[in-house]
View (tube, rainbow, N blue to C red):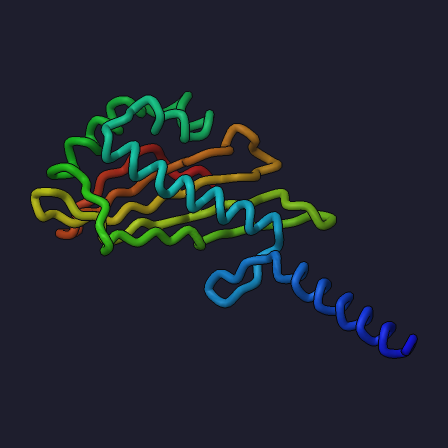
Length: 172
């Protein structure tokens, strides 16, 4: 009887260990750590925030998403206004709009991230005038050597015909 209880307890412990290990998320077939999962969720939210700011012409909120370095060195008001003018029509989020938050580069030292950069894209963006766009951007979540780079550096908006509008600039 005791042997069965020990076997049952052993199986329960193994099941709990396996389920707790499943807290990481698979992205493109790669298992993410809990920290990376948090970054991925943050990127998912930022994708939606960027698109909503552009959709609502919310200059103030979009500017806040940029890193300090870009806010200090670039004329974001003019660049964001140019982006609003570049997008022909009102943005409509449809079932063709796809959010990809998984382009990333990272570096660690002694088991801690010292660099974590994402490069998400939003594809299939349509306007009420039948135009299509893709938005891509680069953002640092961690950059030990350049703390003023934390945030979005650059947003690239590409029209279906290949024209491009850029807000900010790349920092490397």
